[in-house]
Image 1 (cartoon, rainbow, N blue to C red):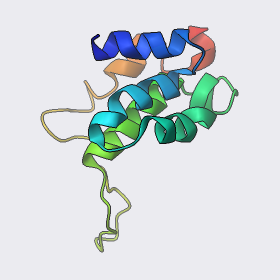
Image 2 (cartoon, one colour; image 1 turned 180 degrees about the vertical axis):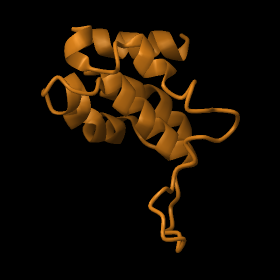
Image 3 (cartoon, helix red, strand yellow; image 1 turned 90 degrees about the horizontal axis):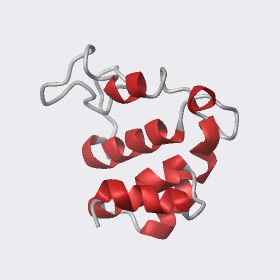
Length: 110
C-alpha cells in the first residue's frame, strides 16, 4: 500500500488528518505509530477542533520537523531551527499544500 493510501485508510478508520499523516510518514523517521497518533491527536479538525489550520497541514509540518528539525538549540539569536526553504523550495511553492486546501483552513475544507 502506498503512503498516500495508507494515510487515507487511517483517516477512514476514524483518526483525524494530523494523525493520519504523522502516523503514516513519521514511522519512517523514527517515531512509533502509537506515539504519532497521540502527539497528533490534538491537532485534528483545525487545531483542537477550532476549524483553523487543517490537520493534514500540521501533520505535514510535524513530519518536516522530524526530518529536518534541530535537536539542539542554536546560538544564532534566531528561533528558526527548521530549514523550511531548503532543497529548492521558495515562498512561491512552499504553500502548495495549503493552496490546495483553501488556504489550509479546516473549516473551508469540511
